[in-house]
Image (cartoon, rainbow over all chains, first blue to last red):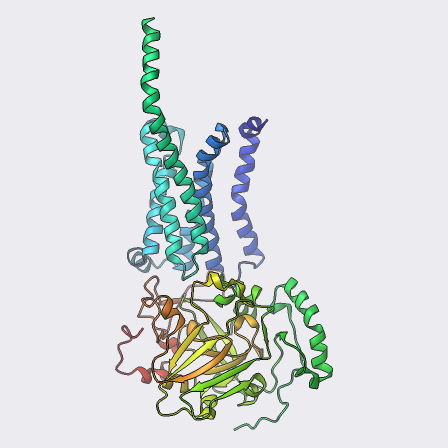
Length: 218
Length: 327
């Protein structure tokens, strides 16, 4: 039943539509004059927040599919990751077009001088190759191992994203810390999973080999 | 000089508007205060005897016009809706829309302001006394936040010097320290503020005595809404907004430079002076430009002016000072 839902074409369409909802709400608010007194800040924060949320969601897929034993969840990982990229592009475009109004020298100065912008910009740049190589063709071209290695950069992007938020706030770190906790748990799970497999596999491998060789000789 | 007659300031013209509060809170507030409002309207003498109530902005009548009033200022005033629903008041939450949502039930009556320290005549003022201490003047000031956004607000009040002269500062008074109201019960979000409370601010004596420095009791022709620092606050238009302490309960004339909240929080980013200065960046962002609230969707940021455009009136106080060091 769950498998049927997860593998259904329509579920993917539904998830896609849901991922666009934050943008739709933002546009709706824009047309109904509900972006508050400082619309630039509102849009910047909304798109920034959704970038972090999609990064967290993307990173939650692997732990969830293992814990829940729902391997089909992997079908949504690329989509969620690309939506993180989509919202960070909107975030970046808002900064360029609305906040700084194409003042390139000023922006370049900001990227160099302001550490929260430096780390945010670095995180954004890191996501670009991941977005480009997200297709099946690129997985083939790079080979699974190398592709996987490259896409581990998403951990760094997520960390940089949270630092970007943490360094940006004036004194109330509640929200950045919430993201830091979520990210910390997801990364800690991976570290635990990796350690666990390292402990169990070296012992399991020789046995497997032995049985297979004995099977061949037999 | 305008001599104010007793009763010039009428509370009878109560204009509670959904504007100041969210609609739901407004209705709740209306229910809660309608009784008190009725008492105000019909039996002014009962008001003093009535218990503490949350404040709903009321119209201030007979405002005096001056050099910063409507007729003399061409600058476009920020819509009240924008100015009152986007501001910082960390005691009521750190999001810019938090204060207008969370300050509705803040009790500001009765209120007393204690003025003490290096003065000959220390005393405590009631709100009524403060409102009648000098003619209330409408002053349209640019208000520039350290976060690089700005508004243009028609404040109501009088020069702080009027109050200072009454208490007669002694020659040893060199600075003025301001303290905001703080009560954990009324400000349950205080823990998330990340700043030491109560909020404290300070000015050099000459800055405090500058005619531009406003002891403010209203905005947009009405008493201050809670989220903007009711019932009495400071407005120092050539300094970043955080220098203008809200909901003041204590003013102390002192010998030494007093501690100030944001300077305590992060001394590298917020200095004692905090004059608006486009040439000295905040370590994390540029101060060269600002976003004027209430404009169009694609409005460009506008250049920030030295001393927020009040250089003629204040620059001489800082002659010879290195404003990069004394930021």
